[in-house]
Image 1: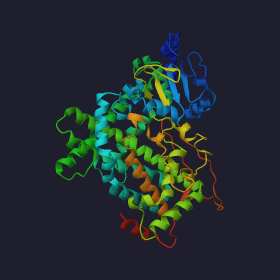
Image 2 (image 1 turned 135 degrees about the horizontal axis):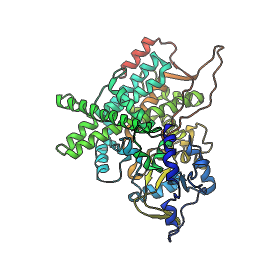
Image 3 (image 1 turned 90 degrees about the vertical axis):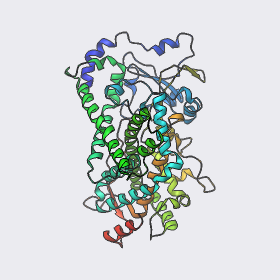
Image 4 (image 1 turned 60 degrees about the horizontal axis):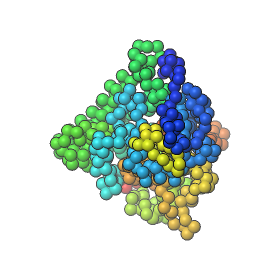
Length: 510
């Protein structure tokens, strides 16, 4: 909390007489802002929030104030959308006005403005988007499926040989898919390039904690404090991060260029982008930046979602058994599932959808911003205000998902037994900012889930007396949220096979 101590010196001077321009504008002939809890001077509504899990607070407020809420956190004005209906009405049907991002002081301070996900809506962002679309559009994403199956089989081998390190194996699996799809890079155990990128991503996540963002963005004058000032360690961290991020952007790109020059390169985001936009320097920079963005966006979310899946299987053995029975019926025991089996296994599809719904990895998604003033159902939405979509509230809406805290894949079937058309779209974002890598991510999740269910049972861990160790799911806080470490056993379903025979079966299906 060094930042908080440093902030106190400046903030006490800065907060005197602070009011929001949005609140002033409300009184200048505009309709009212959306309803919400009454803010206190300086703190706004911070004192009423669960700062670890703000999505829970926002959901509770929606029960009082409705699906669109105005809130103030310190000196930051926020409009929160708690329902799919409102999010779709604004972010999709009026996407031209809600495709911007807020201008966060932390983005420039920590040198992370290059990321596509936080780029302002404009020409640079459009270049990034074209590069992503070229590489990961539906018809192009199919190219990566053999690689994704191969990586899923490697995950099985890793889990087979050292199941206790399942978290590490999931992280390695997710990173290896992204590195291959983006840079045509084959990861190795304890890979130094992946470790370097992962360290950079960890630093970004540390830099973007809600408390840092809220304090610095409320009082941008803090960015003027020199790095030697007491309590200003955040400035020193910013300088260190910028150095690490340079390597994160440049080194894997240089590797990809060398592969292309040698004539050995397979299809990848970098090779496709350079081939399509050759000779345009602005696009070369955009390819570097968007590629570096892809690693964090892809590996963290896939890894975290697979943790949700394993935890759900451990706590819901009846779901696991039904899913495995479907695989056994369709695939048999002499091979492993592949993408050709996907349409024939609707329950596996429902398990994947329920994994995404049960705990969205980005519970509040990435904030949008209004390009111009707008009015929605009589409420004023000022230009520039931050728009937060509470994805967690949407996926836990009891009217759409009865018993939302239970893991029930059956909710995705119609009364006639067919899959319904609910694909849990809020988890992928909205409008022009929808996740462009969702087809790759979906295929990575499906191949890993189907493969793991075919080979392993996920069981509760046992104590010294052989009794099951019960646990309640717990989640990390922050911008991205995933299960905290939980006890489980991962054991082969084929008890009649030793490790060597199982490894051979996996290898023959690669």
